[in-house]
Length: 357
Image (cartoon, rainbow, N blue to C red; front, side):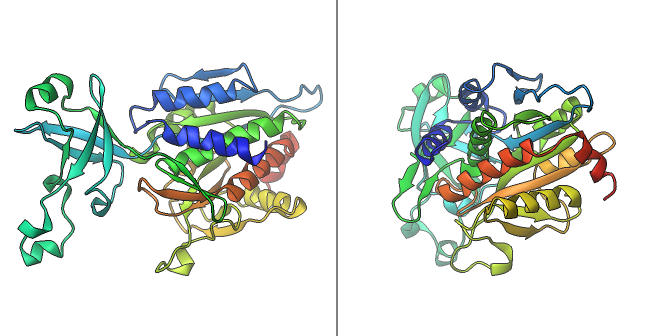
């Protein structure tokens, strides 16, 4: 896949709304892309999107199943109350820093879709102490610009709210910015890999999984790890990119290649295989030490049933959990190729080798 097409896919995926618990529009968009490469695309009972690429039949070797997983949900908001004048109170879905909320444009998913903005008390009316503090979420409100009667008829408690942010391609550094790049970037990497598999022979059955509700507890990964019961899992997510003022030990260079996680949540044999592929193919990558729970779908797969050997690759991302996340297209393209080479380079004998690790 060329970079222009990959950019178009990511921009499209980013522009679709898909808050945890309401991801159907996002999964259907991803499904249309996967159907270009396989007719074995479906949703499971939980709603996770599955795209299967059967491996080549072999009379001498038992087939291996690899799950390549990326969550598709995004952070957002939910309406909790309609107040006098048609203003809306809300709570976050997923982890959102309240510092970014005042002044944001949003879209309210009521009976119809309505634009709105998140407002707060102006600084002129705050005490000197309040001016120095972050405005708590319960003091913020959404103004949809509608009269109270219309709001009560069209918008209700429990309606979802997403950030209104048009994704953009930045001229410098070959980067894209927008909302939901955590983790639509990884879904785009899966689609790139799907195209790569058209040009590669592979023994393993490959199942691409676009999982739901990661931002609120890895729920889609938990159900799919149990239901699919793959022999191996390769989880794709994002990690923190380097920016001014951040600890160099906790961030990774944007444009420096994907970050390969190392730690107890990840299988050392899988990590070594991925490193070998990166070095053989001259694909740049970075090492990410994770000493405990990775906080990603990798955790759910690793401890499912009797245990699934799992690895984690992440794309460095700036401004995580904001409407202006930034990634490098270079990292996206490298990751898509790395996934394809890995999928094509394993068979049942590899699983036996892992048992010796």
